[in-house]
Image (cartoon, rainbow, N blue to C red; front, side, top):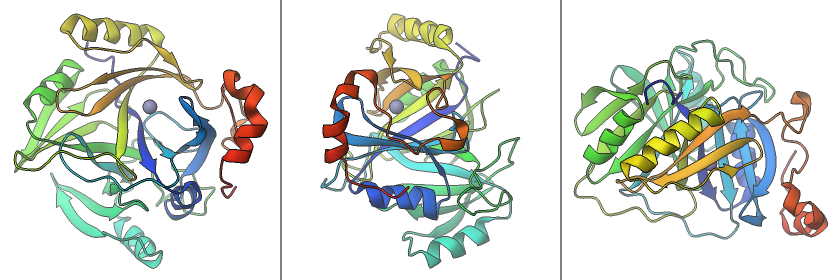
Length: 310
Ligand code: ZN
């Protein structure tokens, strides 16, 4: 299956307040909102997508803001830390900016030779900025953060697991290679990916299981180029005994989902057709986009959804 997976596609998390979520990602972090749509399974809830200019796979953080929702509890069986890449030498800027905006949980450290700055999202989500070679990626500058300092996309993600062996095996099967290890964290890396290339598995045998809620990652999506590659990986996963969903049309990509042995929900998403399939690049994320089956209910949906800043 090597060379089919291209790194991360998107990470989807849950939030409480939509407007708070929107202003944190577009304002504080300076990402572009590339799509404003609804949860396709619960159209009274937004699905907000934030990324680079066009929502390049590997840059897209997405949220379901459920409104009044209890906070999640960190633990095993989840994506513990979602990591964004920033250009080398910019963590000082970021530390100052995030502190000035009241962001909590700021902690600078180094891991496997990479400088990183951990911080909390508005719902206690765990994030890190990691200094990394831009590798041809460019940040969105529309929010006023300079191209030399802006977020380039994802660096990777760190999963918390009671036992990392089976998930490590799965990642290897998906084309990742076991890389360096530091303490109880083992890095896996994909060759020829989109630069959102690392998955770190943190083994915490004594920790209790995570409880999903606001601030929890709902699922993590890996990128494939197209539907043919997705069909290939789906068949291989099924043959290996994984229970994989049928292909689901998410309007901006095609998705399949499966639960991993460590408890984390994985998705494989296609790079096609992309977030500009129904909006001009210049106006991505501005209008409320609904899947065709909900268009007849647009008025009602618009009345239910809370207002968020442009
Ligand atoms: Zn997804």
